[in-house]
Image (cartoon, rainbow, N blue to C red):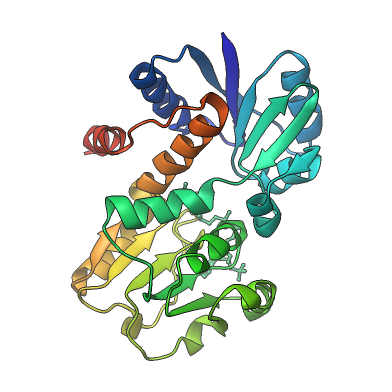
Length: 271
Ligand code: NDP
């Protein structure tokens, strides 16, 4: 039976084993998928041990996505654009890295939440690894405008410079977000995960638009509650999580699982 793991620290909270178990049932694939807790600074050795022991593939989560990207023998264009990898696959002795987070977000927005990104005005808050990973896939959908706002302006500027040739992207500080209507406000900060206040001006919360927090579960509640009070449609990042997993499953197994039922089940379980 082919073996897969999700590597992270912490990792006990990860929903990935449950998601992949449902995908395997659905597609009739026989796989083993487990959590692998790795100590900080130990990524290379543990990943080597797993793949030397016959591991077929791995998902990688915080805080090891950059380590995974740097450790792999080769990487996809989208992993290079993100500078980080959440996906590894063994091809003989060689390990290839990819990044399925961006495509996961775009599929959740466009298919599950019916938000077309073409010509949309998008505000992306945050400029860490998650934000960087979704910029190229969003720009590939031809939005009217992508504004990236970050507490540390310089990080947002670096991302805007890197992707300027791929579409209409601008960088601003959190307190300088332009007073214009956005169709989508994406929270890609880790403020909610650390239970910290996210200092966003009220004017970005406009009724009718979609507010999306890449965090999921209770971590997304504060941002989404504020948006809901202002009449916005809201979603946490659970759909993104399931969609990035489905893309991983497809790359490993060559079968594309149905996702909406799995998202519904996980939401029902939380409720
Ligand atoms: P990083 O640590 O790389 O980046 C954190 C970002 O949050 C930075 O831009 C940082 O700003 C900003 N930030 C942190 N605290 C605050 C605050 N109090 N006020 C304003 N800005 C703040 O994290 P990641 O990019 O890897 O992850 C971000 C989020 O995305 C997490 O919640 C993560 O769980 C989620 N995620 C969800 C996925 C899914 O499948 N649903 C996939 C990947 C990530 P500064 O630069 O100023 O420090």
